Amino acid sequence: QVQLVESGGGLVQPGGSLRLSCAASGFVFSSYTMSWYRQAPGKERELVAGISSAGDTTNYADSLKGRFTISRDNTKNTVYLQMNSLKPEDTAVYYCKAVLGSWGRIYWGQGTQVTVSS
Image 1 (cartoon, rainbow, N blue to C red):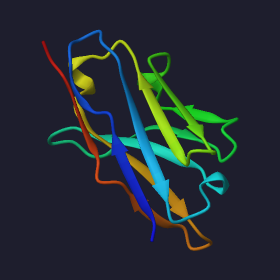
Image 2: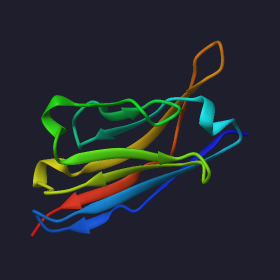
Image 3: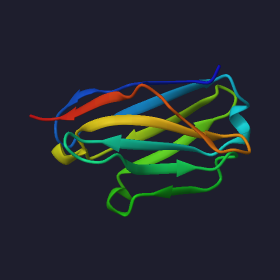
């Protein structure tokens, strides 16, 4: 079955960096676009970044451009999110998302908590 397992979250001081990973299994990873979303307390889940199946096209939420970088390693079935210059407002649960098959079924990971605080 499809599994998306995020890791790499934690507590970091403002200005710090984290790299999140999402390990995928149960589908042909290299065939699908992957995305990162986040959800802060009391807020709706929002798109952070997306990456094409080959990794040659990326897109970002406008407010995050220049600080966050999405990448993938299709040999490891893993998508990454490098987060730099973190701010307290980046505090959220970060989720990995895949949309698979001709019906566009959506799969989410369990999320990883990122807390930016001094």
